[in-house]
Amino acid sequence: MNTVAQAIAFLKTQKWVDLSHDVNPEIPYFSAFKPIETNTLFTVENDGFFATQYTLVSQYGTHLDAPIHFAPNTRYLDEIPVLELVLPLYVIHKEQAVKENPDYLLSVDDILAFEAEHGKIAEGSFVAFASGWSSRWHDQTAFYNRDETGQAHTPGWSLEALKFLHEQRNVSAIGHETLDTDSALDFTKNNDLVGERYWLSQNKYQVEVLTNLAQLPATGAAIFIGVPKIQHAPGFNARVFAVMDSE
Image (cartoon, rainbow, N blue to C red; front, side, top):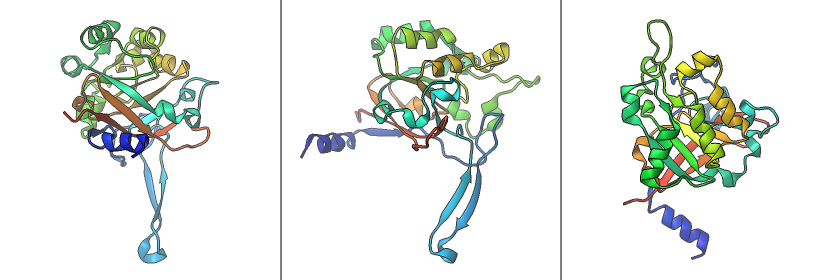
């Protein structure tokens, strides 16, 4: 058996975790967009084959944001090399903190505390913020979490944490369970997604609306991201999964 075949055989003995949500018109989505639309073009019964046309925004469900989504003169989706779509995965678990404070901001101190326990985050890795927010997925009211004034309350990355991961650790990508990189309060305060704009401006990508991060260890897993190679796309819905030690 050759080395590649051995690697595949080994991976299949490990634990695999699907990190993507199912896609349908009822899922939560960014307020500027519309739900997916489905049109059946042909059926096996009438035409001998089944084909469906979908109309959906590029950032829908679990999706990859290419840098060009927010930053001119950066990479499109099809320009992200496949080697960059398989990365070592670090998961910063803050589920309890977010449960106590839905406006929680992941901070530099959180990253340093994580490293004190699990070791330094490696260059070229993927760092995920596990907030537990995906447990609200099937309840749009809970997922958007708006108060009586209409202000949403959702967690996010602090700008300082994102700068630290880029400037001090040079990680390749980040991910989270919410619709936005920034907390809802920060978005309102800044009238902009400052954290998301910063991250994508570094010519780095992110994955939004992840699920099942609670099932992953802090270290020791790898993340795999599958996206279509649509030329000049600013991102697209993604099938994302992690492979981790079976023990």
